[in-house]
Image 1 (cartoon, one colour):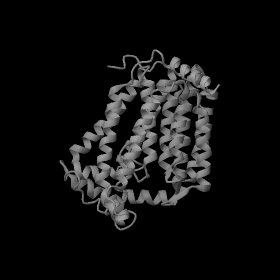
Image 2 (cartoon, helix red, strand yellow):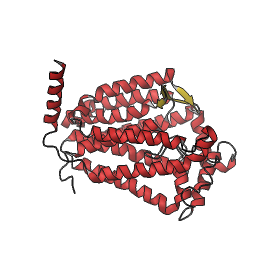
Image 3 (tube, one colour):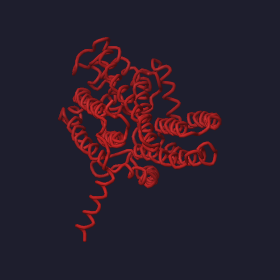
Image 4 (spheres, helix red, strand yellow):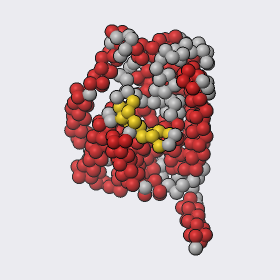
Length: 382
């Protein structure tokens, strides 16, 4: 009986994938290239701290490389999943992610005044990362189902505002400002693409601005981060220390960089040099030219992603691809903006580069979803 059930399931999966094209090779190549460069830079940026903390210079690199290998296998496996499953399981995934956001407030691990991580065995993860993906897939499913009703307040605003409102309350309690902003911008972007009328965004924008200023006024740590952003030189040994060390690294790189592996700031001068501030080490070692090439690779990945969204065969696929790409675009912009002091510190990682195995796994899983949906894009070999 079990063998018969398995055979039926396999035949059904095969039927669902019949007639689907190949995955988008340019997007795949760009993803793998960024992962490879990210691993090289992670090893270079982390070996001083790894030796200091563990006695093994390759500690962080080996762990990240292992997660990268598993993530790439998972990414390729996801490309074979019937794409209808993403829509079917979007709401359950969102529900699970909200439960996890509640759980992290009770049983989560605290670091630097924020409680965002859950430890399971030998790994940790941020439930907010799962929430971001779940929100994209859920919004894509709702919007594609509502159709022309998206122009009304009842369908085009209310359900999305309720979902984001619940998530924002939970994220505020962690607190996690950068994730709130990413979800707010990507959620609003998907609503706009889905057909929500512009006049509703005016009201939502005013509410969002008031909420943002209220958030800042009630979070002491956020206010101090803004002070250190505007005037880091006033407190160079405490609140302004990390910003100044990051700027020293970027400035030291100059046009061509000091050379791969030759960073000075990574020798325990710059905190989080292998994590949120790894792009500072990229600038120091590879210089303006190398950093610009990496930014160009990200831009090519994002442009290709939006191209795939424009050529998707249905609205759900288009919105899912666009939502995932939009979220990653915002995250890359935020990270580079923070390390260059264009933006105040928000505690956000650089996709494919920053240390964090579960985050890398999830990013590759998201790339797998895009590659899956790219099978149905028109002229996907262009």
